[in-house]
Image 1 (cartoon, rainbow, N blue to C red):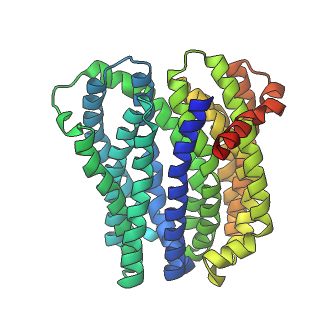
Image 2: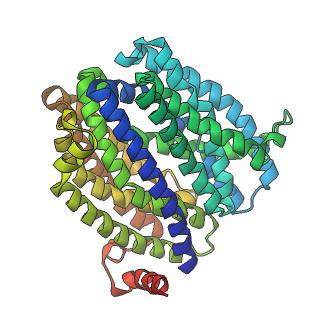
Amino acid sequence: MSTFIKDVLSVGVSKIFIIVFGLTTSIIVARVLGPEKNGIIAALLVYPSLFMSIGSLGIRQSTTYFLGKKIFSEDQIKTAITQIWLFTTVFSMAVCFVLMRYFSKSGENMWLVILALVPIPFALFNTYNSGIFLGKNEIGTFNKINWIPTLIVFIISAMLLLWFSFGISGYLIALIGGPVFISVILLFKNKFIKAFSFDYDWVIIKKMLSLGLIYAVALLVINLNYRIDVILLDNLSTAFETGIYSKGVSITEYLWQIPMLLSTVIFARSAVSKNDKAFSLKVAQLLRLSFLAIGVLALVMFLISKYIILLMYGEAFIGSVMVLNTLLPGVLLLTIFKVINMDLSGKGKPWVSLKAMIPALIINIILNIVFIPIYGAVGAAIASTISYSFAAILFVFFYSSETKIPITVMLKYKASDFLPIVQLLKKLKR
């Protein structure tokens, strides 16, 4: 457990950087551009965000699995990755262009659509690359791939929005800078530039895609559950309501950094674990601790939500308070899914999540269509909370069935749960 805690702390530092830089950027964008323009940005970025799930074809996850289990060599995987990346870049950009241009109210401005598309190839490249580091359990390097782009985005956003008043274009340009910077570094640092080849090994590509596609579909359905509200708000309501909703959601996403902190390490460790049952019991312990931590933070956030919104985004976003408060119960329950899902994904069983997420997505869509015309942003929050809660409860049963761990064992707190924290505090005192 000590090395696990070390990895968690390493990822934790990365998550702190992501939260600080991401939150500061969010504040700048909100205060400079206001609710309506923030709504336009949210509507433009929702499709590229979704296609980072399906466009990545689950290659990061399948890379981690095959490298962690030593099924293929690193060089073989790198070559396969570059060949898959060239195809997915073209596919993702083409489909995203059609969706943004013809299925979004915010896609009327061609310049903004192009700017929103440009980060896709670089973000995909970075995602593929990170799977190499996870498969080798090089958590430190994986962390840098995640937090350095947020720093670059923050710096460029501050310059273009505060000093040069570039508006929406300025922020979209900033979103290009982060992924491009990391891509250039990784191209040489990880020697990916030597991996480009026209000598195709179809056996490896087929195996990576066959497992990766399952990951991709699972990630797409999961992310659709997170993003469908923005898509439907864009079509059924106004840019103002979309902007109000996007800022309420953004705060809950930072709350999710805690389970994401754990899930990164869980996925990497699960992929190389020799004793699946013992590892799943550790994951259940981490679930109990993270649920408690997020429960306390969610309660505090609920009590001071008004002050958080006003301090960060200003009076113009006062409507985001109700959105935030409505989302918090669902966000808390979905913490369960976020932690334990990575265990099954690391074991090569990403399809299990679909059994919970597909019904939850259907519920989400129906409720959004019903509630958004009546309640706007708050209606979308109600739909999401119900959907998240349903998915989390359902997935507990599926996880218990797959791991052969009774639900009572999985969720019941024990005194031993807190021993790692006590040990860590003792070490910090020395």
